[in-house]
Length: 177
Length: 67
Image (tube, rainbow over all chains, first blue to last red; front, side):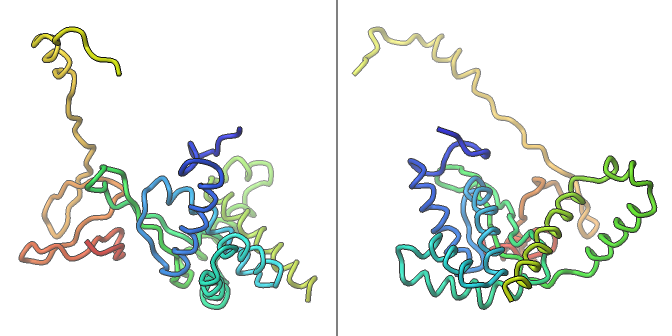
């Protein structure tokens, strides 16, 4: 049985973990910010951000995929799906990935478990980061093409992949339209 | 259920307990408003008012959560 990259499964088994992640994601989209353990927050981040990516795409197929993920059993969660698609997705429209933020807040009193707050990044994308990205692109263009890949930092690569994904999403939208 | 056959000696008990040590946390030193403060890195800090009442948790100038 393959073990997930970030350690053992949450809860008792694969099904328990699926339900936990779905519930955590639903609560995150409902309340915009939830307090949980660092371990769960780290597992939730890629799951929730993927759902936001679906929400940004916004078509019926992606809406059904999100509903299958977080609202397959609960009809009340359908309102959360609505919230995600109608209110959260437009806010994230200009953001290329990194829709959530994890802040560690120390250990829990009862069992000393390290706790964290995971929140949706609802602020508009700050122009400062855009300036930094432009400067990096300019630097890459100025440098010879052979040297550029070696100089790229991990962050730059992440940003690039996010941009590529966003471009793909846009391309798909145009195809469907 | 397995049960110990013999009483554990005082020496053995104390030898075991002597290995249990506290580790000092790695703190970072920052200067805030001219005062040197030590805090845990990468973790939200509690903001207090002048009377020392805890208000909320803050990280990088952003309110994170209530205390």
